[in-house]
Length: 242
Image 1: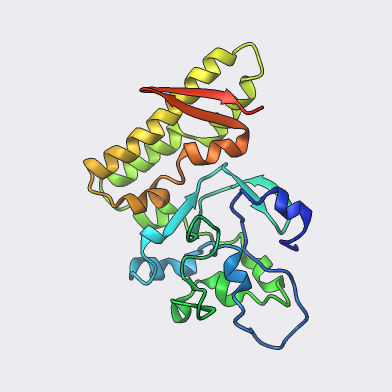
Image 2: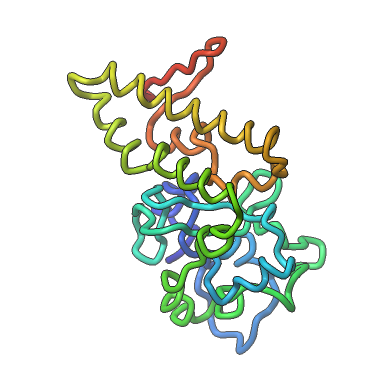
């Protein structure tokens, strides 16, 4: 589970199901080196729900890996479809480095209120973290299903932008139905973009919350599936990467 090996580098563009540093010799206690924080923010569990609801971790600092979205499971050492939402803390400056990591201090700005995975991680023995990383995951339904109007919008987006459907359409690009698949993919990508604009303009959402509410934009994730997306005026053009 070494993040520096060539296998992990192959999947560097994908979010990790679990963020762990290279296992080191047992120092007896955390050295506060920050290496684990550099590998990505933690995934959240139901035990972390109060941290969101009480505002210790604002939702604008979260993003959602949606069900069936491809994620690098570095416990199993391969890409897997997420079997449910995985809500994670965002990175900073275009990197995976946890947004709450303070590089100058090599410390965490929410250390006293850090999530479960951070509390369980010992870089010299990742066994405890590996046992809980895929259990009791916190989902968007846990947090926003009671928000009138918003949850209906999220459910509609999940159906129309379902990754299972998207992956099937991507496969169809190589078959006799390629034109239909390309058109449907373009429509899904356009819907994903438009619903985000609508949620901000009409619903008053903070743009920083969109990656949590709807997951990351398809324009950001689909290149990881070999898809190139470009705009030609109002038209979305979808092609396979060569």
